[in-house]
Length: 301
Length: 291
Image (cartoon, rainbow over all chains, first blue to last red; front, side, top):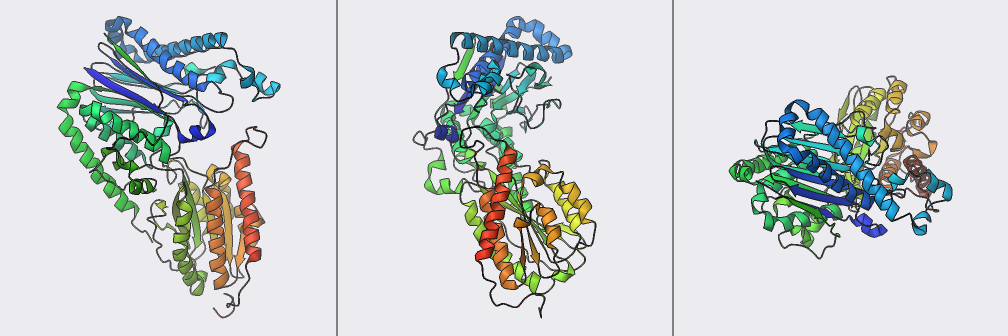
């Protein structure tokens, strides 16, 4: 029923500064559900193990969601009425899983002298150990007729439901601090998640991406149109995958030079059924983009 | 049965490119970074339809179009601005997407276009002068538009903007109230601000209140000077504004963004003063004698 892909490319700016890719991404196709996950390690000086932190975040999310699906029938019976509580519990479980991985890794791999050498002893003392691994996380799940997602820090989720329109379904948590990237490493991380729940809607495709993708666009319209175009080509995923991968590389290279990750899950049967609609949407978007451009270039004085 | 797929990050190298991806075509590479994300080509690689956006810099021009600007001043300003656009375009050919927004103020305040326009597409609309000098209203309008919810809503990251004020007279409204509102705007706080007084009547103290420093205020008393000063300020501020300055100092310690913006504003003042001092006045006729 579901299929998917995920990919992470390393940003040109990280190549220049000798950093490894800080992003991680994955997807999982379960028996009756699918998960798309991306994570973006912070990459700045004090988050010197954030490439591992993002990997742990992706693993932690899949493990947490899988655990809730161990009794899928009970989960799906409870989601319509208790989705807030269930999603909150998934968020807590993700943070717990992530902390477990970080503690284990740190115990097995203590901070090296070389890692410490970048700081004065006082500076190093001030950094909380989990901060070494700081990362964002975007994870989304789709079942037979519902979709939900969680997010902490930057990143985007785009969904195309059966009407073929690309939308950003996330309801942002207004209590998350403005202008500060929330992170799985924050001591109050479990309270900083944003989430959404979309019941009684069949999903064609769902995408999670790190902010390197969003910031490579000049407008949100273009960003959404991009996902519609990809969706219209997913029927030929095996051949189209390379086009997507190369395009992500080019977006990083010619855009803001950040790492970019994209993870996608899609409903193969519904995609085939709605392919004409999707192609129509692509054409409509093209016309709307031309109309926006014409309006933009109209002089007002 | 379930499938779990983790992705190993791929290093961004240009060799590994599918023939389907026409970004590799040299012509397209040069076109791709263009600021206009509406240049659509759905015929080749479908994904090239939505072009790549670079970090952007918006240059705001605030231009006094009150009645006292009528005649030579406005004529000269129109000509200089038409000539200036190709020069700023060259700044944009580096790795920054430059956009221009022009706000005119007289009895009313009015934007030349409804949004900042990519420099490649920008065409100057010749301005006419009439009415009074509603500078305070212009400051309020700028404050309103200089926001993530309005003119600065592009997903691609923005450098702090350049804000360039040109006026020849004393404001006819309460400019201080407008300025107080504008001063609460973070884009204004971190933006590069410069001002040009045109003719004898322009008050440099008011302009320095706007820019925050006398170093970034210059004065033009003649048509020749007006052309020189506009070019010096616009080109220098776009160059500095689009420069990525490091967020760490020489010892590798991270420094705050505020320090970076303060350093940029200081550099702008120094460069403007250096360039202005090397320019000769020329022998053209002053605005206030006979024009």
